[in-house]
Image (cartoon, rainbow, N blue to C red; front, side):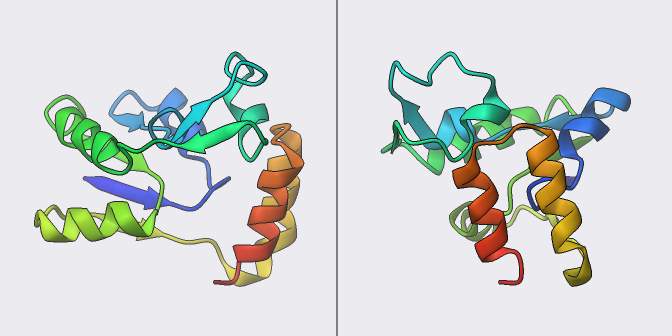
Length: 130
């Protein structure tokens, strides 16, 4: 089962605690990082300047999803529109998990506790209700 879930919903935590869940974090597939942030912790570099869109996105990520479907019972992914559209085209089923609208402040606090870059926190703030 593929589960597409909004940022800060607990994908990484679930994968750390349950062997049959795999967190396929998207940053290294979506972005090419410059030297200033390439070696930063993944949570800290989310939303940071110093990255450019990978021209192989989203196909490199989708390829990895398909590869991991053979290895894991549950794959946790980002709910990126391009990714989901391609999964639809390929007739690959997935479940989308979204947070409750009233929990916006909680999700922003989670991003801060993870020490996400302020740009990522601003992204959550701006697009939470969308």
